[in-house]
Length: 100
Image (cartoon, rainbow, N blue to C red; front, side, top):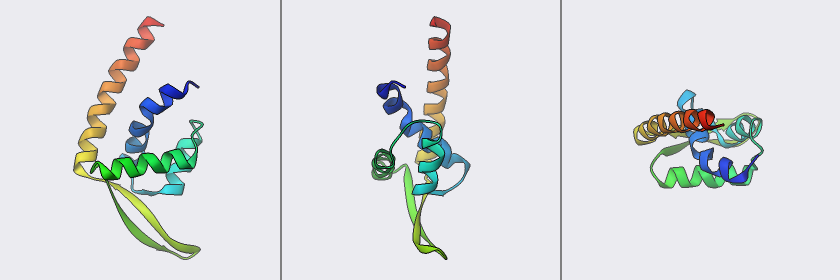
């Protein structure tokens, strides 16, 4: 898959996954990389950028199988951005589909 296409839609994929439920980094990585060939390092950079932009918050949850896990939670700003970007993406993808 074209790397530029992935780069352009990766933030939307992360935000969309977090609309469903809070998730920890490894869980997000597994879900997204199962569909798109993306490295964990790339996803963690996206998570940091989204957190720095105010779209995500984090909190720790103790784990019985190791260290505490950092969960990512969509802020209200992140939720609004995800909804707007999703609408833009669907419109864009529809127009591309028509051209193809």
